[in-house]
Length: 170
Image 1: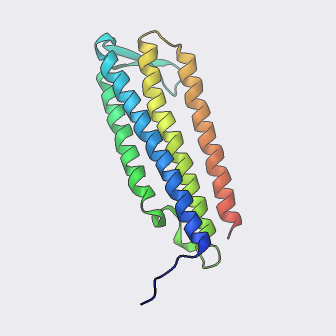
Image 2: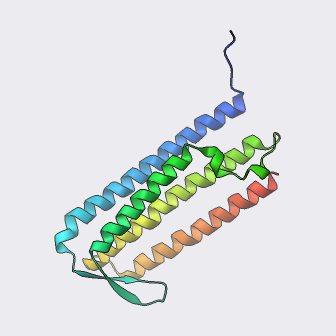
Image 3: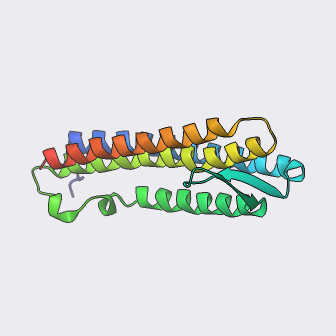
């Protein structure tokens, strides 16, 4: 019985993606851990109502308990993206895949998913941390809003870049 071998390009793709997955997993764990630690340590010092910048360009107060809800949503999102990273076939549209471009399409999809995971860790946990620091008067609101907008713009740029590459590789 012969041992099945994986073509070198496919093997390199698998190894590179495992490395990217480890980086994204470590970043998500670190982001969630730092956010949880800051939330626990600062809970008693937080005011009952926290002022946050919303899309209407004004500050709307919310109860500090909502920070926990945002944290749980962030954790659920990271767990969902972790599971999705283990099922790469769900990351691509089947009508874009041919035998000729299969490896390049999976590579593009996995890399865009990697960057999306990193950016969402920054966005969700960064905004929660920023709201905590603003509530404790350790940071100005402008910095949190600027950070949030920069991460969103970078997400759009990365999405556009990888969408362009995916369409070009057809």
